[in-house]
Image (cartoon, rainbow, N blue to C red):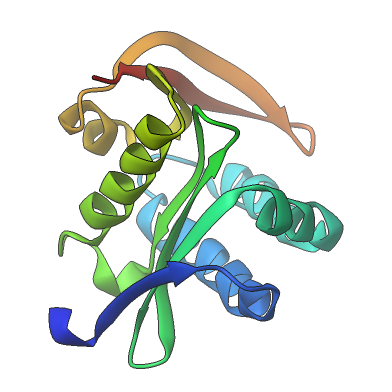
Length: 159
C-alpha cells in the first residue's frame, strides 16, 4: 500500500454504498475459514438495514481510510468506549491499515475520557485485538437472522 496516497477522514453518508460493499466482500473472503457459509450470509444480511447504517454513520465517530478515491477500510467509536466497526478491504489485509484505524479510535476514546475500550469481535479478528492489548472476558453465542454465531466480548484498559 502506498501510504502517500492514504488518507483517513470522517465518513460521509455518500460513502455508505461503498462501505456496505466492502463489509460484505471482506466478511465473505476473510472470515470464510472461521464461519460457515450460512453464518456469513446471516452476518452480511445487515447491509439491507440501510436506516441502521445511516444512524450509525450519523451518531458514531466514524472514520474511513481512502486510497486513490477508493475506501479501503473504516472504523467507528460508539459513545466514548465501544469500538463498533473495524473493517479493512480484502485486498488491503496485513498492511498495517487496521492498526492505523484502530489507533485513531483509541486516541479518540482517550480524548473523550474513556478508561476502557470494549468491542464485540469475530473469531477472525480476535488475534488482531489481542495484539492491541484486548482481553477476552466472554465468548458469546449470538443469533443473527436465526443463525448462531460465535464472537467475543473484548475489553482493553486505556491509560
